Amino acid sequence: MPESPRTVHPGLVMLALAMGGFAIGTTEFATMSLLPYFASSLGIDAPTAGHVISAYALGVVVGAPIIAVLAAKVPRRTLLIGLMAMFAVANGLSALAPDYHWMLLFRFLSGVPHGAYFGVSALVAAGLVPPNRRTQAVSRVMAGLTTATIIGVPFANALGQAIGWRWGFGVVAVLALLTAAMVWRFAPQDRAAAGASPLRELGALRRKQVWLTLATGAIGFGGLFAVYTYVASTMLEVTHVSPALLPLVLGIFGLGLTLGNLFAGWAADRAMLPTAAGMILWSAVSLALYPAMAGNIGTLSLSVLMIGFGGGFGVILQIRLMDVAGDAQTLAAALHHSAFNFANALGPWLGGLAIAAGYGWTSTGWVGSLLALGGLMLLGVSVAVERRSDARLCVAG
Image (cartoon, rainbow, N blue to C red):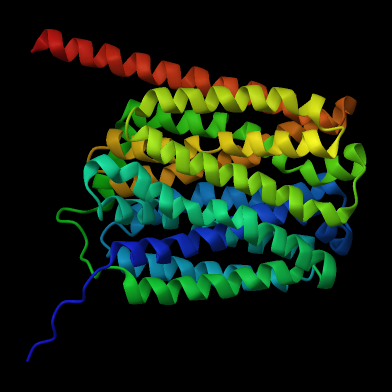
């Protein structure tokens, strides 16, 4: 008798996809928290070590669109497995990096599959549920990344302090291999969409709303990274706490990010744009309060929780990109993470400039607030352009 089709369990598929997000989130955020340790090991100062983080972000920015276009005809399940295999190898090499320049290269390669993985995962998750639950489905996949900031990042930081920063990257390589196995086992077998081609995916780049939405994320998210990148150094130099408290505060940030992600997924399925605007405004206010709250461990922890919560607006932008991209879904979904990691490069760079100019570790909060307000302004422009276009269509009709 012929073999019956494999039953697809949406919950298990989302768990498999979230595991990949957990691996990615662990390495992306733990690299920031481990910065003081690998900087010392590799014989470089903290601002130079920040370039390692930017190299990863650059890998995401470059890799996401290239993979999305070139792999347009590859089945999504096959692509996800291949991306996780590449991610595992690159992180394994990062754990073995002998010096600063090799570390730059390996972190760049680690970032290459990041955006395409999340973009394709979002499309797979959204396709498993009714249209009115898409944002919640994507938020569950992204919960892997946010949970990593509660569990994975503090664990990697504690591991780095106890037995060496290289183990943080080695653990991520193992998690990536586990993800590949889970996707192979649980994700639905599929074929490339009819008519899929690199040229069709590139059509997303002709849409003004795609660019405006990407710009909103690229600028608006920079504020979160401006603060988070230097929060460990701020705790040591300004709050004057024991290094043993670093994992706890990083976990509090992750808790805020997870709660914000889940709230945004629920609220956006009911009112997408108002929720997006509210979340960005929350970020701007939270970041502006950071300098005043960083002097005490209690208020700093509350500030970090608030800043993390504001990061939930990313899942809303993911769905908006899918809505405005037409039939170029894969490229648009992947480009969201290019924008996210452009923010990952921009925020630490601008924050570092403020610190280097003598404004102090907490000046990153003001830098971050201005970036969040820039994102809010771009969202407003996007909505205004969309309404003007809709009005013209109504008149023409």
